Structure formats: structure tokens, C-alpha cells
Length: 494
Image 1 (cartoon, one colour):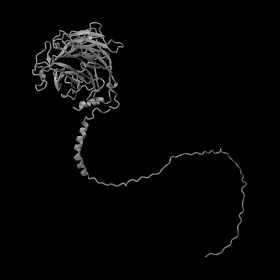
Image 2 (cartoon, rainbow, N blue to C red):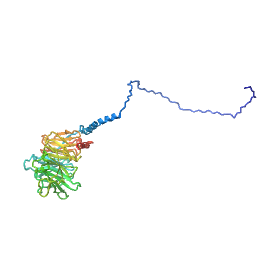
Image 3 (cartoon, rainbow, N blue to C red):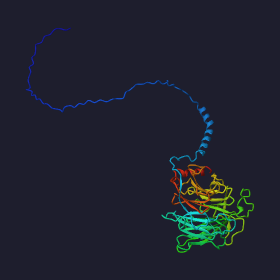
Image 4 (cartoon, one colour):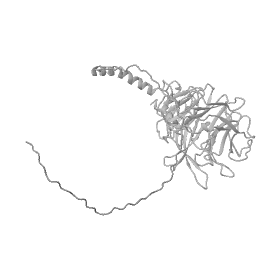
């Protein structure tokens, strides 16, 4: 299949293309720098732990059993959750961390040297600037007619140098001065009521004859001690009124016309009378003689409704009243004007004379009352039963007032000479301030917060002494959420 074969050889010659050239080049780099470094590490140890083997649990649920269980416990759970929601066990204990400490200290003591030792401080009022304190002086204990002269005094406490024993203004009245109140906007006007039933208005801007109105010889005027005078305005703010209450049960609404160059003119706009006819026969404090007049001892005007006010009586009754009521009083009275019954609601009141009523400046349908039955009560304007009752165990409570800056704070003064300040945000039962207002335990009849200078509170006692107290910041600086807590008191009873 294969066989040998031979061929002739072939020679291939090299052909040069030319001569190659060569070149040599070099480069110099910087010397390399080297450093030696070392580090020390922490000692490291290895460790091991042994865990129990993870058991793989397998369970199967029966939807029917789950539905049966939920149906069984849902009612109990809902009931308990609702009870916890409504519970007040820890009421007032939230947000009190960091609350400033509460304290008071005497700033100054005032007493006009010309005042008889028989006269007590019966009422106090700050003017609208918060610089002038007005003081009413009168005798508290009258068995019959009043034979004393009352005195109206004022001090400007903002002055650098004041005479603590001499008032800037002192004006005599024909009988004991029982009540006073400065106009809420005009700092020079002050109204007052006397034991003999006179209603007086003073203009402190005048240099002489500051008594610019007196209700003497006006038909249908008060004949008994005027226990309260309160300024009010119409809803439009264009009409000015003065509401007065007396121990004879009369309530008069005076219309006031102010003039820049003339003395103010007052006329009786409406007249009301409190009689036993308004009290149901089954009521505990119902008088046996339904024709008898109910003695009015205190009055508070609602800030929520300009026509509503509450009256406290000598027998402990609390009556919601209206200035637009036209109800028949059940008795004949009045000479030039027809009298009506103002009562629209009767509250479950006190067991003794109601000496003061104060409406909250934050929740205007809440008001607080005090009485000689040694209790302080908070009411809702539309509910007959008290929302809460506080018993300070300090004897008679003669005066109570809400703080103008702290929704949960109010002050009260007692028959054993003490000043009590409650802060319901911190303690619902006991006062955070309980101090003697004088050294001899003389009764303290009135206390007034200063609506402009918030650190000031004034008290007046049976010996004619006025004490201006300085409050710590914690008593007049609102705590976050405080207004909401006050709202809980109201809503928990609605």
C-alpha cells in the first residue's frame, strides 16, 4: 500500500532587509521609605455554651373553639376595661413630676388707724389694674339696727412707699359697709352695699365728693343688708348693669348710664324676690311659711350665660336664677316696678348659710360654694347634685374663690383664722397651703386673688387687718393638661 519515494533537494537563501539599531535609556525613582509598627490587641478567649435542643412544637387551632372562648370572655373584658376607663383611683396623679413647690409668705399688713376696733373687714376687691385694694369695714354681729359707721378704704400697693396704717382713701358710710366690687374695666369705679340697704358708687378719680351715686329714697330699693354687688354687661357690651342682693330676698338689676362729665345715673331695670313658694314642700330646707322671703347671703354670676346667676341663702339653699325670668313670685310686692321670681333650678345645697359662690374662669359652668356647715362644694350649673364635696375640718368656711390663673387651684378662709389653698392637681383632699392668717385665730372673712399681679392674694379678718400674701410660682403657673383634668370632674358626672 505504501512505497518509498525520493525527490531532489531545494535550497532557500536568506535575504537581509537591513541593519537594526539599538538605544539604551534609564530612570531614577525616589528611595522607598519603610517603617515598622506594631499594635497590642486584647487577649481573646473562646467560649462555648450549650443550649437545650429547640423543640419543634406543633399545634393546631380549632376556629370554632377560638370563637367560643372570645364569646365567653369578651363581656367580662369589656366590663373591666370600661371600669378602668372610668376609674378615678389615680385621678390627679399624672404630670405632677417637676411641679414647683407651693408656698406663701406675708408681703405686707394693712390696717387703717382710724378704724374702730369693733369693725371687721367684711369684703375685699382689687381694681382692674391690680394695683389698688379696696377694703370694706363693718360690724359682723348685729342683733338689731346698725348703730355703726362703715368705712371704705383703698391702698395702692404698687407704690414704693405706702403707709400701712393710713389708707390712701377712706370714706365713711351711714351704716356698716357689707359688700364692695370694683368695676371690671374702669379702675376708678367701685360699687358697695351697706347694712341699711343703700347701694353706693364711688369714683376714685374725683378729687372731692367721690360718692357719685347712692340709692337713698328710691322706691323699691333694698331695706336690708346688701350682701352682694356684682357688675355685669349686656352681650353687646354697650349696656352696663349692677346686680345687687340683700338679706330680705330682693334682687335688683340696676341699669347704669355713664357720662364723661356727669355722675352716673342708676335706675332699677328689673326686680326679683326670693320667696318660699319656689321651694318644694318635700325639700329639707323648705320653709313652713311659703310667703316668707328667703334671705340672700351670696351671689355668683355665670361667665357662660350672661343672664344666669346663682344665689345662696341663709337656710343653705342654692338657687339658679335668670334675669329674664317673668315667673310669678306668689306674693304681692313692689311700688313702681313689678317683682318676679328669678328661680329656675334648685340645687342640693348646704346645711347652713351659704357665704360665698365663685364661678370658674376656665370652665364657666362650674362653680364652687362654701358654708358654715364646714364644707366646700363644686357644682355644675346644670346639675342639682354637687360634683364633689371637700371637708377641710376647719370650722366655718366664710369665703372661697377660684384662682384666675390655675384651673385646679382655689383659696378658702375659715372661722378659726386660717388661709387654705387647694391644688386639686396635686391633692384632691387636703390643702397644699394651710397657714394661720393671724396670730390670735380671729375669723377671716374674705380672700381675693389679684387678676393682674398673679403672685398676690389678699385676706381680711375680724380685727380689721388686711394681709397681702405673696404666692410661689407653683400656685399661679398653669400646669400642662390641668384644664383637661378639671374637665374630667365635670364630664365624669355628666
